[in-house]
Image 1 (spheres, helix red, strand yellow):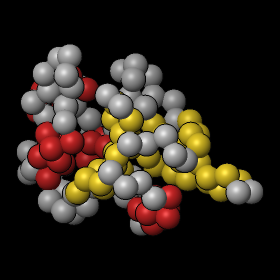
Image 2: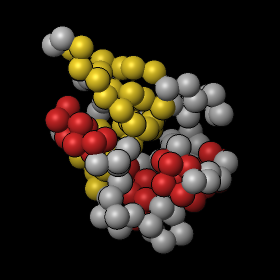
Image 3: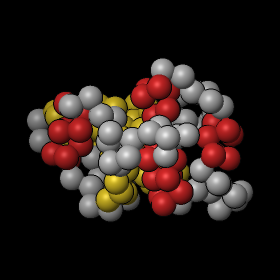
Image 4: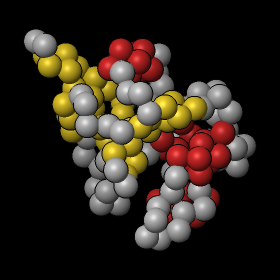
Length: 121
């Protein structure tokens, strides 16, 4: 999903998984994902970085600056591409590639992420 956003094309999820050196059933670590995002053969975004401290205001800043990011939950990576505030409630707009090719964005209450990777040039 991030590949499609940044490159206006997207190899099959399996191809990206292989480029990240994923091994079933263990998946792909944040370090492996970062290598792909930073690499010239991946997204070519060398200033990408990973965090485990997820702050709503940082998500707002990234989205307002046109930088969707990887939103991680246990065992799964998704893309965050929007936010909204409704009263005192905060939400993130999540694009989930699972199941493959069935990516209908949805609103998720802020607070369910474990980690993020900010994708930066």
